[in-house]
Structures are given as C-alpha cells and as structure tokens.
Length: 247
View 1 (cartoon, rainbow, N blue to C red):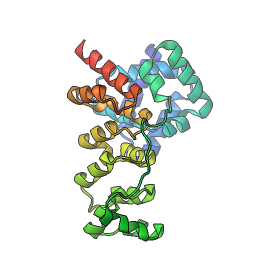
View 2: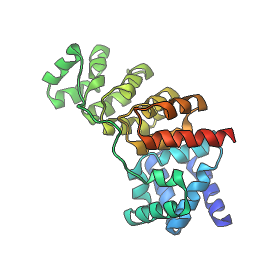
View 3: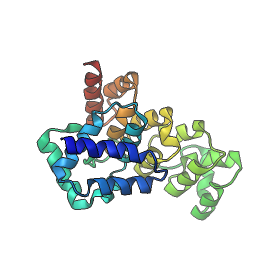
View 4: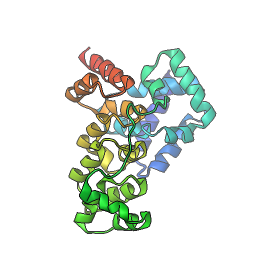
C-alpha cells in the first residue's frame, strides 16, 4: 500500500505541471504500466478517498471521466482486468468507472424550434463553417445542432458564453457524444453549473455522470439521488456519496 500511495502522490504532483490532456493521460499510462490490475484498482480507490476539493485530485479525477482515455492509457486488456479486480475488491466507485452503460433515456436529437430548424436546410459543411463564425444570432440557432463537430466548434468559439453552453448541457433529448464533449472540454467542464446540468441530464451516459458526482455539492447530490429520470446507477452513486459525507 505504501508503494501505491507513493505512486498516487507522484501522479497528483506531476499532473499539475502538464497542460495538455494527452500529456496527462500519457503520464497516467506510464505510472500504471508496472502495476497489476488489482493494484490499479486499489490506487484508483485511494484517489477517490482523497479530499475532493484538492486541485490536483480534481484534475486527476477529471481525466477518468472519459472511458476511452483511461482505456488507451492502460490498454484494453488491463482495462477489463482492472474492472474485474475492482468488483472482487468491492470498490464500487472504481467499478462504475469501467462500466459503459447506455444513457437512461434515448431520443431523436436535433432542432426542435421552427426558427432553429431552418438551419437543417444548410449542408453540414455550411453549418460547421458557421459555427466558427462571429454572428451571434447564427451561433444561437446552432446550439441544437445534432452534429458533434458543430457543437465542438461552438464550445471553442469565443462568442459563446456559459449561458449558451448551459442550454446545450440541459437540452433533452441530447446526443451522448455531445454531452461527453462537454464533460471532457478543457474550459467548460470546469464550470460548476455545466457539470451539474450534465449530471442531471438523463441522456448523459451513466459512466460520465457517476464520474462527475464527486464534483457536486451535497445539495445537488440530493437532487440527483431523488431524480427518477436518471439512471439507477447514477442515483445510487449520489446516495452513497451523500452518506460518506455525512459520516
């Protein structure tokens, strides 16, 4: 355990000095490369026992939101074995990180207002080009676009504010890919209102929502735990986290 504690402390220290997500994932892969699956599960469980408000802890946990990122970092075979080890060890938070369940709700994604629906008359190439532009009225109409690239362009557009991004995060129905974009975005994933809206959206993949629960205040965890529209795994995770904080 002392060895794992040392590796975790090194990760928490070194991840702060790396600005790019790919570099951070590379560091994670290198640190975990010499560990057995059960050791990886133990280390991640130790991470979730750390103080949630510590900047380094929050950053390292944010790297685990995207299952593809951690799968790439440790390899597909060790990913599966770590999942099995976490179940055997009874580490519920860790096992949920490795469980890719479908969203609780599914629906047709796209424009739902008449004035916005006119954008569908444009080609995908035109919409992608417009999403990089500076015409605010046009950008507002693109907020409901079903194409992840259009939304990715909007998220990086300096004319877009938190108010517009919150509309994307709250939209129902919504695309799992788009909600994942928001949850892993370098800028917008740091905004508390955005994170809360993603977790409370029943169209968000539960794997992402459960990873974000650690970032929520207790008052919002109570909302999640009581929301019957959300996936049972998400509600259960929120309830368990509330009990931990009350102890």
